[in-house]
Image (tube, rainbow, N blue to C red; front, side, top):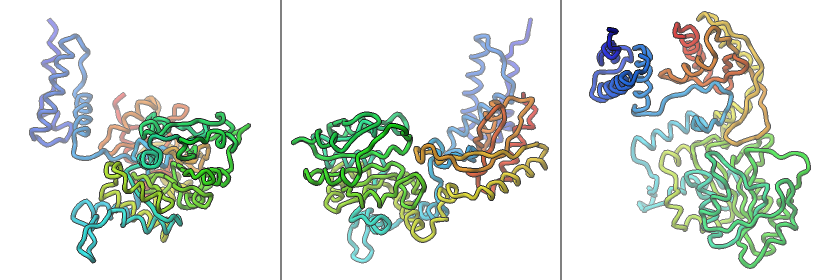
Length: 447
């Protein structure tokens, strides 16, 4: 009679040793749950797993139940990677956020007068200095900024927008959905590819509160297209005593090819402009609304603002990011990666290749086009370099999956059966660590 495979399951202590976990109640309970699930699977006739695979499952669960997020090294070349937290913060922004988190601060306290103050005071001056706006308000993300603007300025009334600008942002969240939730009534004009000034003018009626533009930052439209001139559109709104709302999405405070600067939309006549803090600005997750003082004050006074306001870490990190955009923009990681010199990226890829060779892995140097990501700069491919590795006899997808399972995960791309590692989005100081992670996965005896 064959031996019951359940008797060959590793012990709790053995799995603790294999995974390197301490013998505390949390990890012991977790391992016992994994073993109980495996016993049940074997009872139903499942094929036995080896102890190494069970250890991988335990480690994955341990990572999922640990006190922090898993660290990821980004070798994809996607700079503003939405799934990886978008923009990496600068050293200064990180330090200021940690300082705000670890102790008390003057978040809503005026140290000079001893009276209560507003957290917006820490950001408003810098934002208006950078953009030239009369006033500004910051909330927790750009969808929140758009939602607040529509709710405070157009609830129960109509907002006119081009059909070609009814975009969908990340997570299947669409502009029409935001508008509907705000209580504003959407009025679509024009066609998908062509909307003229006259289309907006015909749609204006007694219930119209605003005209709205949405910058299609996550796609581009070419060919037989037409858009209303932004200055003429703002003049049309003001001639009918309407507001001009402009959502830029990504939002760039500094010149970036292919992306309008935030300040330019104010000069074109917008009453309120909204944009993200964690995309091209390179800061923490935040949404910023700037514009006329009386309009921004309506946003600040609305009850919804309190539900959307940023926390102290975001305020501290955004303030540092805004300051650096004025005095040392090269210190912002997103900007450094966007403007990286292809020659320097080639040298970094060569260095990674040499580090891999020392570890017994052969890699070739290949040109690689990076992208901004995060719904920014659609169609813009950045010139760069990567290393390509033939994972044979293993499959590239199997190696790619294994790279995601380490204590520090490494994300790479698979192209034509090759593992491709883009150096643009990797920290230069950690290339040796990247080489170690790659070598361990590629030279593993596990099939």
